[in-house]
Amino acid sequence: MLENLDAIPCVALRGIRKGFCGPQGRTEILRDLSFSLSPGDSVGISGISGAGKSTFLNILAALEKPDSGEVFWDGEPVHTWPSRVLARRRATQIGFVFQNCHLVPELDLLENLLLPCRIFGRSALAEGRKRAEILLERLGLSSRHSSLPMGLSGGERQRVALARAFMNRPRLIVADEPTGNLDESTGEQVMRLLENIRQEEQTALLLVTHHLPFSRRLRHQYHLHQGVLEPL
Image (tube, rainbow, N blue to C red; front, side, top):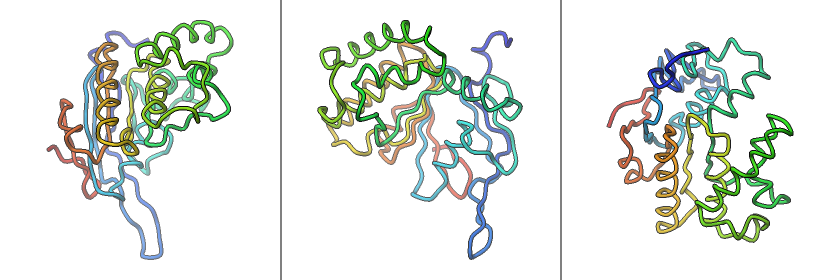
């Protein structure tokens, strides 16, 4: 058991390299990239399409393996864990918010929020239901818990996605273009809610966005360029 987790980066990448082979030969996407994020801290990352932002996030979340280098969660190298252990640790380490909400259309809002709890079995569902109801109330959706996603606006669906990301009290929220499909006013509302909840729960935030004003509101900003994270 690790002690004093607040003194250890909740996620760290060391010497990450990743490339792909194509008709024109090998293309390096990430080049000896290193990165760390402390508990409760916030980072915004920008970069043009094709810069490797999705690859970076996938490796950080242990959804994709690097060609070389190591990924650490709370100081532990994730490559040493069996896939089953990795899946369970991911469920408590990282909450995901995507540009497309990825809600299950056949499930109501409460059932969608309970999905992250199912990896921990039946006993987690009872506690998860209370947590889901609290989050829906905080996001102004307590009266809609039995609604299906198709009956919601785009902003409401993204608020549900935010709630789902926080369900298992993760150490880190990874938000990949969370306002990309929303108009400016609705995007501002969603971003404000994301910031408020993560500050209340002292959750670290890694935001990938093309909207630089949102990125600049975070503590650190980087630009992913030619496989390297450059401070802004």
